[in-house]
Length: 370
Ligand SMILES: *Cc1c(COP(=O)(O)O)cnc(C)c1O
Image (cartoon, rainbow, N blue to C red; front, side, top):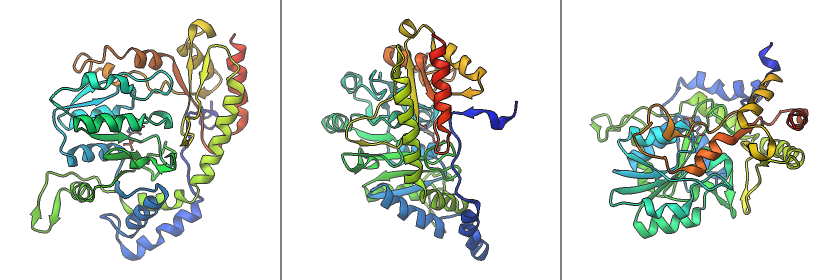
């Protein structure tokens, strides 16, 4: 079986090769490969514009963006978050010496259940780290209210929401900071990469410093930093890919609409739906399978699709609190909704140049199963 016959959950977007070559040519003149060069500066300013963000700091990847932002924000003690996320969110919390306190999610959009946050707050709590899941945005207004009431920081894992807007505001403008991932598999990529959006200038200075070993100048190293700089080749890829972002989101939207049109009629399968007041990026297309009503469980559907060379993902499964690395350490047993969704969700293939026929093939397989 040839790999190119396989339909995977996503396919990295690349600009025309000539454009990338053109963009990197100047690197051979300057010999400036990394350390905040010209491409880094240009991408930062273009993203600030596109994302309608006050400030943007570029980083080597989304994970380090999370780690550096937690460190720069001076968090300590406990952080309220959800286990229905990618490994990165929980790892970044734990690797900063913080304790994750797991809050359950809502059944309709899989984001943090704001009605359950307050009961988890203790005198040790310093922040809330909510995740905008699959491009669904959290209840940002309610989270803001709770954070103000208890004087907590809010740092969004916004890795799934590049290019999104809520009521016309760039999604990176909520909370104290929002982190984005520009990994190859995401809606917008810089090969590997990420950024932080924020409005506090001082936070930006700290991030800039931390991503370069905490070096202030040749003779002064003022913080325990790391190396998390985005290099010029990454930034060049970003500059090229950014030219196609709106076109690519439009193409994704067409695929999503086709999925909605066909799969919505299948009894026992809940399809992803747009939220009100949100400009979506159509990054993922999750379906939730109710075994009672559909007749087969998620794993059986996964196998059936895999037999036909279509590879969706059990994303997010398992919950991060159930990882071998965390089992029994930080609780999470009360996250019943998250556990139920995690066992029944499947994210279907979606990417800009995906053939719409794939959607029809998936529909045929799902309907034939009954
Ligand atoms: C991709 C992702 C990350 C990590 O980003 P990288 O760029 O891969 O380091 C963090 N959180 C979520 C929810 C993600 O999907």
